[in-house]
Image (cartoon, rainbow, N blue to C red; front, side, top):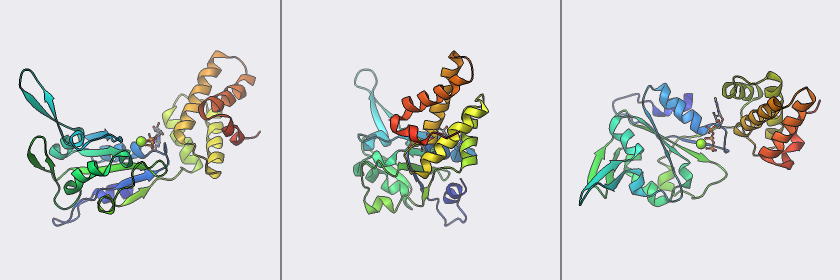
Length: 247
Ligand SMILES: Nc1ncnc2c1ncn2[C@@H]1O[C@H](COP(=O)(O)OP(=O)(O)OP(=O)(O)O)[C@@H](O)[C@H]1O
Ligand SMILES: [Mg+2]
């Protein structure tokens, strides 16, 4: 959070905000952090999900047919942030092609404007406009060219959380969760992380949630262990059972 807010800070009238990139394995909390940082600034946050077929027009302005021979130009969430001085979160940015990134190049350097080819306009970014993109470090669809890389700095790596942090994240998401189950799932996740298994807090939330649902249909202590085991099995598969906490 500190690094992200620092990157967005403007410390002099000649200074510019940076466009940080949050990288890390799936489910470690990149999108959550990006959103929380935007909210911390007290700005509106606009999240756009990038995909392999995100086109430049999707990122900026799209023409929509409205009635007979009438077109309306609709701003994307990203452009809305540009105009209103909000925070844009370009989620899963590595899924998007170079062509789409190229359309954002002037927005990401000292020019800070975007051009819409379809609408034939050039829009200067509001001084409060901030951008962050998230990227999975393993499932990269496109290797971005250097001129894009250099505009998406710094790269802030989110690693797996420490044990007590992970417990708190589970607790935050499952405030009604039984302590024994959350402790068990935390131990499970920590064991999986130390084996560098791709198994994240999102999986942990699902395991705990499903186990608690299963357990609520059953009665007695013995069912808790079964519920947790079944929940691991159905969330991550048999391989993951080896990270079950002992005792
Ligand atoms: N610090 C945190 N506080 C509360 N919840 C968190 C925190 N970090 C992660 N989570 C929870 O973990 C889950 C995964 O987080 P998130 O979706 O932000 O991960 P991600 O890195 O963006 O994943 P993906 O790569 O799949 O997009 C969410 O349910 C989120 O609520
Ligand atoms: Mg995400």
